[in-house]
Image (cartoon, rainbow, N blue to C red; front, side):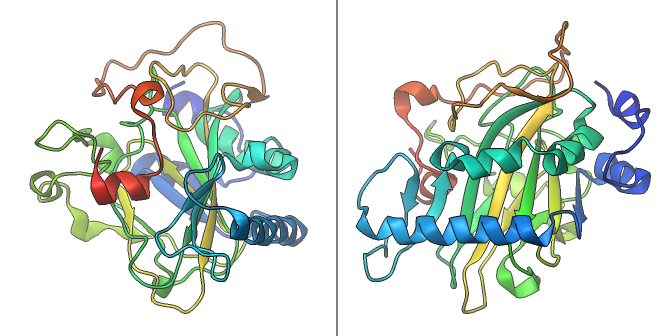
Length: 295
C-alpha cells in the first residue's frame, strides 16, 4: 500500500497527525501507548532471561552475549527472537496494542517479520553506528516498520535511538565495506552525505512506542547512566510486502498475518535495494558483532 492508501483508513491508535509525521520524517515517538501492566510483565520476563543468561557462555540460540559476560555479572546485548523464547513476547507482538499501531503505519493487513530485545549497558560498549535496516532483510516494498517499546524512561543520557528526518526518502547506502564484507553501517564517505547533524533522539517515558521506517538512517550512542536501557523491538510490514532474501533473524512466527487478511497481490516498489549476504550460509550474530568486526 502507498502512504496515501494507508492514511485513507481511519486511525486506530495513533492520531492522524502522528501518522503524517511518520510518513514525512520516517519515524515517530508516541508516549503512553503500552499499558503499565503489560510493561511490568515484559520487564519481569526481561529480568528472568537476564538471570537465565548466567548459565550461558559462547554462542546461543537466544542470547547475544557481550565480551564482559559472566555468571556474576551478566552482559546480554540482545535477546534474539524473544517471540520464540517465551510465549508472552508473542502475545504482545500479536496483540491489539502493537498490531493497531502497525496497522496505522502499514495499512489494515499486517504481517509479522521479526523481534529482538536489545540492552544498552552503561558506557560505550553498545554503540550502534549509522545504518538502514532494510539492507539486511529486503522486501518487495518499503512498508516494513520497526516498533520499539521503551520499558523504562529514556532521556538523552540513556543512549536513545537517533533518526535522520526524511532519510527514508533518500538513497539506500551500501553497508558493505571496501573489502566486500558486510559491516552493517554506512561508510564515512556516505555519512558525510547523510545530513546526520539533523538527527532527532527518540526519547520518552516508559510505555512510549517508537516507530522507524525500514529506510530511515538511525544509530544510538553511549548510555551515560548507571543502568541498562532495554528496548523491545518488533518488525511488521504490510501484508503485500514479501521478503526476497533470507532473513538474518528468522522466528517461527515470521510471515504470519497478525491483523487483517493475507494479500492477494504483491506490491512491488521500483526503488532498488542491494542484495545482502546469504545469511543462511554465512550466519548472523547481531548488529553489534557485525559493526564491531565485520564478517
